[in-house]
Image: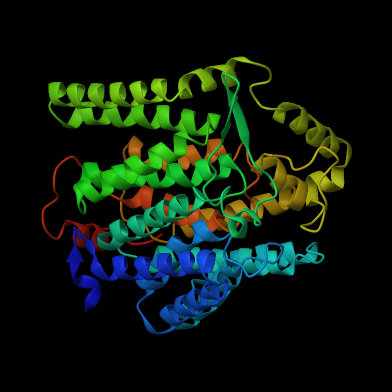
Length: 438
């Protein structure tokens, strides 16, 4: 089978698929938007005739391009339709879904549909996303985690590279209404967003790839050179977003990784490596002016960038409208006059209420627990979950295309064994046999 042939410790088949997808995305930007249609067909055919791993490589790689993955800037992203189509195909191919999880997903779908108004695409997308998440959890094996991490990370890297042309290519800039800028000593600088609308959404996606690539490095899974290369490039792009949340996530992640390395490697080696890495990054950030900009952003004005006032408005609205608080206003509801809530927890209650939020949370817990491969978790296993739970506190993520793919990556983060030494051959298989789903 092609997927067992490896290049740099990763599936050669995965690299090939990602290369074709990236070429297609470039074609869609520089040649004709109909290249996006070809890539959509490519993904659907892969979902139909190839293995399940390959289908998820496509989805994980392509999700970072969803903003431009469309024929017209105002249309629904082709990625949403590809996600729905691939999900339907994979549901038919895999067949069995446990009764309790099927009931949980359908309850959420029915609840969302009751108040969906004209948001039927969103309801279908979220429902199919939940099924895709379940299929991923029940079919993806630990030996293949590294390829899914790399497929997602390469998609982030590829979209970041194309994103550097966002302000110079008219055919690319037409997808974005807002240009995010910042001043540094009187000089105007752009906040990097990749192919996202907002630098903070880019930061969330980048942090997932950064954490999981470094996990591959310390686990010695795949080529360290490739993982470190992708890790370093995304770190550079991430800092250019000038996102406070990215800085916080990077600092916390760095501290946790250093603490872990010092307990598993020789202390002096860990200290030397960590000191050199932190010193090099700090020097680079100082020379680029990043430190000055971020210090001003953190110390001047409202550190929440207006979010505290927005949250207060929404909380007052929820407190004075019990029906909204309990049942929600439905996905068709427009935002309040202050705009979006910039908080997924508040957003969920506003749209679907406490009842719908609990149903949604229960569904996620059931799917996360459908299969457990790693029962001896350390703090690094929880890093993606921690970062996600913190970052969605300042962003509205309930209905975005990436939501269930973040769940897949969190599930990998929870279930990948963390080790500073190579595991004996067959260790993953032993974990699989000894760790049945709940």
